[in-house]
Length: 457
Figure 1 (cartoon, rainbow, N blue to C red):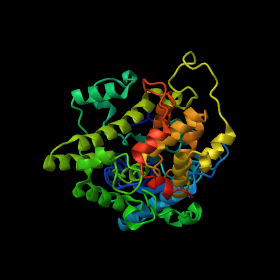
Figure 2: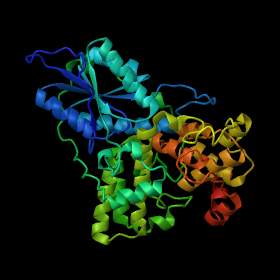
Figure 3: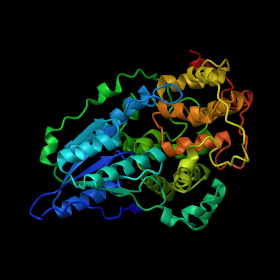
Figure 4: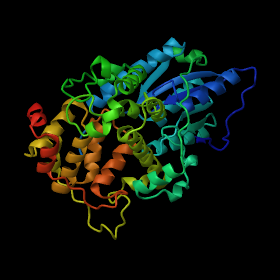
């Protein structure tokens, strides 16, 4: 679903003069199965235009809850992903420029330096990301110099494939899934790796990129983590993502995924696709293609179906953003003021203890210590600690969502918001309370207290 803006007042360049465009990598840090990038390259190669590539790293800022919005683990993982993307671009004869700060400021300045007339990028349907594009388009119009073309490309299914309009998106996931499966909506095949990049504009050679690892700092991650991103097999970037994808489906792990997915310790109990998916080093379509090939050879079972099921959940959170947008970020989420007339409580001291793993509840504290030490947490533990913050400590769910955004190496704006709304009872879940019984969770998922012992300190 390529979103092309209305024609803007961009100066017309004589055909004898070579033009320049810029591709801005956002949450799509890969060269394969990247429709927006493929479109930009195709356009520039056909027109004989130069194409510069840029990543804009997040600026340092504090949340309203009093901590850095992007923590050290996220910074390190993102820096490693960008480093590998830069190496790929260099192999194909181009260069990846790296800037940091407000995209509207940084990218508009870059467009002026390069005298570029078109900025290509991915469309992201979250409020801040939409505002970034609006600000860039406004700057392009004010200067009468460049336009912004965006491409929707992060979902498994296109919104145009759905058997209903986005405005009629079902408010319960099960209804959504049943309608999609009944209509036999099938994802498209992934696009191949780009083999040729347009030439880099001459001016780009003089532009200095920031030092990635000085920006990120030095992270000390704990190798006990279920996603030890500092180890070779779990490194960030497209090459490692493809290696893991091949390894996972060739190993037979997918055959037992549904039975093992709620594990707390180890690398292989779940798919571990999420960090690469969140950075865009791998696409949902590439995962689905490998899943389909695996099922064609070995047959489908409940576990392989469950991988499709969870990819659909990921899509659902994206389509919810297309339908509801900023409403998903309000205190009451999708619930009306009449349904929840009380002001959402928050207790800063209790919240701080939760963040630090000092609540006095052993299972909660173990999970929060793992998150702080490693930037990762199993899906089961995410649900348990989130439920505890909202239902037991009676804190504002948005503070928890912000802490996860800061800490998780697999932070994804759509899934993070959707999951917190779901657990807090302000999303599409028909159940209003998802409080977890900690003793029961411990008995089921850590009966020998192995996880508790691992993260005691």
